Image 1 (cartoon, rainbow, N blue to C red):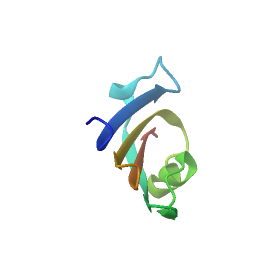
Image 2: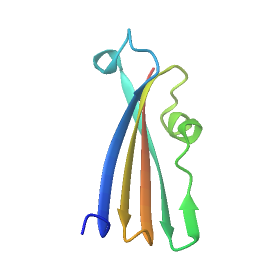
Image 3: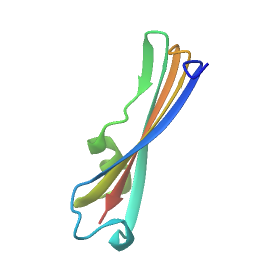
Image 4: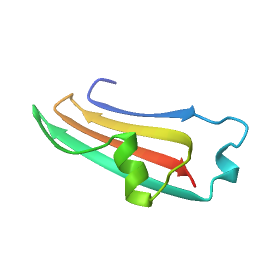
Length: 80
């Protein structure tokens, strides 16, 4: 029954020397989709723009899917 509800997170470090603890700011962008209709923009560019971030240290993705019919994606950008 794992296919009924799926939730996963992925972290991708862009600048591993600076790391998560050195990040001074963070911002998110979210998109949602029901069947084939998608609303929102969950791109890294949008998330960075939402928070005024110009130097990205790392990015986290959080995706939730229910039966593959409803999908929500949130991108969190950390940086300065």
